[in-house]
Length: 516
Image (cartoon, rainbow, N blue to C red):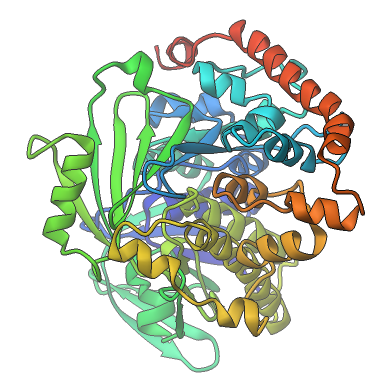
């Protein structure tokens, strides 16, 4: 199949990110985006991960280009509060790679600190390994000085809080249309299916028939092409991801200098968790929960109680379907965004899956012609990404010890026989890696976020009895003598990083230079 004419069905952030990606890499192809003038975008994807910078680099977009137009702020980390136990406090997952160059046993040096000094809080883990946590604690930003902190690269390790709807509109007006993307507002009224190619044409509300070599389905949860038209089976994640609903709202700042922080905060409450995303002009907040344990109306009351707000705010209700279609590229239809699949919003994965799928799509389309092999390779590649992230998100729940409500008790008592006992995991990440790295390797891998989340949830890769047994030495004084120097080094580095951070501008002041 020769792909020259591409039609994107659906707008929003997924549609316009798709259009921007394709026009940037294939300026000679005919690229058209068709969106309904009536359908509002979901708009929950207001937080990103550091990997979005790879996609921005490919498109030649600088953060200062879009941030003033998208109510954007910077993000260094994700905070998780009360996920381990009720009132257990907060831990962080900062972006980038940990600094372990001076350690004896890579990440395990900190665990010796914890075992030898049990009162050390788990929040100390990332503070000893990620220098940018000094910025998070002081609410400052260090954007341009690459060499100030070891292992910290502002280009890759700083993400964004943004209004995803505004981001899509900015891409439309400032990137896509100026570069040649055709834009049409119209309703899709019918589709003609061809057993050989997939969709032969789409019928619009003006009666016109639209053909394409490749249709991109960006129609959100409705999945108009991949699901309703081609009937591709959907594989649900509800057995490991319990949440299926959300209430979302926008809140004004009360004390902006204090509340506009450089991280997304996630707080576990009775029947799910609440996100708090500080944008430039407002705070985005939402309650992700399961309607199996609480009604929608009572969930709203619970959310309002948590944020200490009432009917003075506008609230948007969202029903979610977690899972992914068995194949996301079927014949001449490729689904991107919510139409392909959805992992609940924990860990800011909405826009992440969009740009990561798009990078794989570009890689396949570089060949110009598309065969079934190409489609199969794409489907395999994106599914590995998706399932790996799903297991990573599921790990946040699996490692929790909360038992204060029926919701949390059911999570704590869920059996993971298929994934762990029968050892048939969908992907060796998250849940499975947390197990294998503890029970077999006795240390966590440096890459990825498993070590940050697992440590915050009190799931350590080793323990004092294991260390004593496998090293044939149970003398505590021996281990203190061996690891006291590296523990002192970690403590000194924390102080050094804190002093460096003091010289950085406050986050609010730095953002003023972008937005004003």
